[in-house]
Length: 338
Picture 1: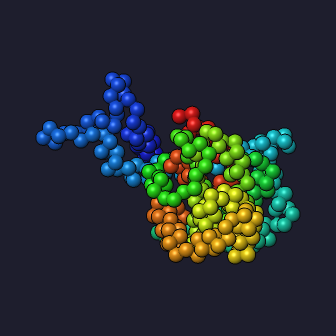
Picture 2: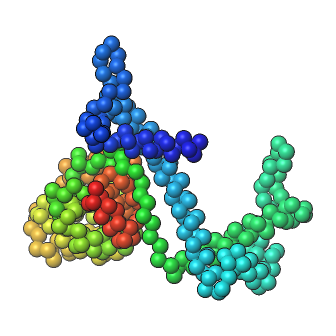
Picture 3: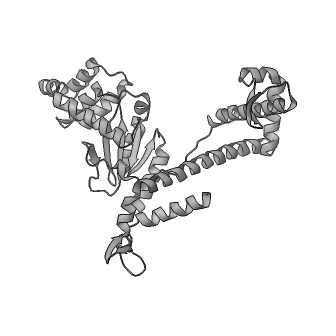
């Protein structure tokens, strides 16, 4: 089954390509079938199964992501073990023994809520507890997994981790039909859109990092910004009103310094600081048409499969909750090189 998925994934890449084959013909125009002399071309086949192909590629990406997380965890343990002159298994076993000696097995089992383990016996589901030898072994195995995860969490606090695998491209994340605010190289073949909300803590936290990326790539990449939330927010209305006076980006930078505390006082204060026409700003802020437009934007983003902020979309690749400038820059460089 895994081999079949891999083959299908490679086939997808081939089908989605518009490059020429060895004879110089466009692959998308290759004939894959004929009906009474009427050709069915490769591009039609690709379009007919595009969603299934994307779902399969996304599933493969998910498998790779899980496997990569496992390899990262293993590498962290190995590096820590080397500092102590041990193998990973020796280091883990010493760690388990130390924790058990400090607190006792029963206390740890109770602390982590491992009082019984569900297991299948024959055709029935039973709870295995420490009244049986088998149950005790299962409990201690579960305890070691908990202790290992706790150890990894503590080690990761001092480890810099970057992952350079990315989700597949999807035509669903084409945002050209939405009112996005753009800057940078507007003719670039690479577009990075930040879907954000000034009242979202993570968005506020990552805002300066995204600006750093903009400053580095503004001559080579087209950068876009669009707001998203469960319902239209005061901040998105204020940003739209500021855009009508060509102050979207300045207003955005000022608004994100409010650390998610956006109210009427803060938006009017920013507007005055930027010397906006306050009568026009107030009128646009309370515009019914602007409210309807932004609600439609929210609805359309949900239809396209977006569900949270911050989300970055780079040439159709949707990346959720990434604050790693190195990972984002790596993908931008990859897209620019293609």
